[in-house]
Length: 79
Image: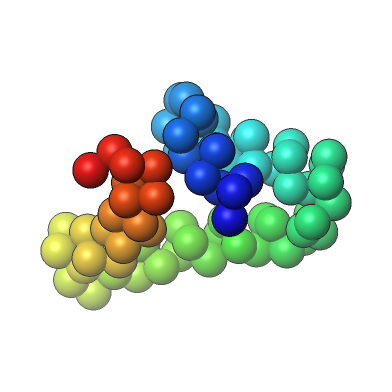
């Protein structure tokens, strides 16, 4: 939990940069997640937003993508 709090607070560069930081830290340095599991998790997160868009357009993508963003903002005090 503290890792993600720190990443959300001090991370800079948007989702692509944060995904790179997470890969470096969680897969390469700490070994918390296997390479394949990390890639699968990223793909599933993207797929969920895509499926929300396919079925319900902007509203669906927004509803699927919003909870993680709101949680991140609340954890870091940015909302």
